[in-house]
Image 1: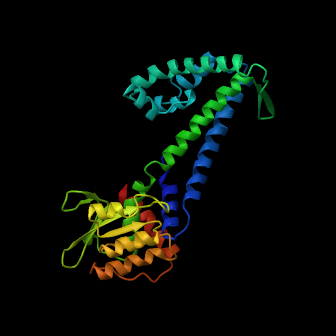
Image 2: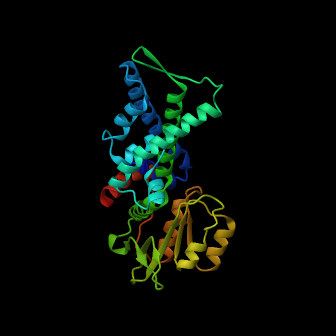
Image 3: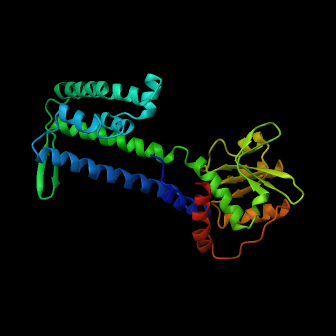
Amino acid sequence: MPLADEALQNVLRMILKGEHYRKAVINEISDDFLRFTVRFFKEIATAKIEGMGITDDWYKRYFLEGRYPPKESLVYTGLNDKTVLNIYGSASRSVILKVVPEYYDELMQRVSDLISSEFSNIRLTMTIRYNDCSVELSFRETLIIVNTLAAKHAEIRGGAWSGLGKRLELPLMLTLAKLYHVPPSHYAGKGLTGENREVDFHFLSRSGDQFFCEVKLMGKGNPESADSTIARRSNIFIAQTLSDKNKSQLTNRGHHWVELGAVDGYRRIHTVFSYLDIPCAEFTGDLDSALDDIIPEVFQEIT
């Protein structure tokens, strides 16, 4: 699942302060996964305590047939909507409702085959304790749970990283604009260059000249590097990290750049604004205090 706005705001703050934000994303993934695991184990333990057992019929009724929205039920068979879309050409509700029980039956058959062939001499069990009660799961039940947890972790991880940079581009640029008091009449979101290539953001000078921006919150050594900016004829390149070669390429070809991962890297944007005659005012306050006010305002504005 994608990061919530609160987590995104925290990541944005870290980017502007030049901190390593990937750890924050990993922590959010871990927290989401732990919350899911605790809830899942609680439901399994309750079922065992009540004597239902983790049978195929119970598992299908409880997790796959109506208790959760169709896309959420996919994880309990080890699937996600992207996989279903790729295999069946659609991830609509009707397709998911048809696929889930069928795939679960196939999964259970594979589990049974594995136990009888490769794991016939293994005795592996899992014990769950809940409200002073202890329940023991069989090897087969344990494999079902492990499969579900693996699928859920993959889903959370993929959702958290997927499109993270794109989701942060607009809030990042709006925050920089507000931090340096660029009038709203002198900036805007998505725009097109003369070659009709889409760029992430653009600013207007006092005389009305348009300066296109490209945002790439990439890691060091990313092959896209400065190439996308040069290809799109962008004027300003905002990045998390830039190699010396990137900086040299951009400077030699007349592009302005800002490396947010450098010490006080965000401050370079003021130099760029001043050089391009974009109305602004230098920021001299406390960055943390300013971001406390600006970032929530930006996210509210976007929403």
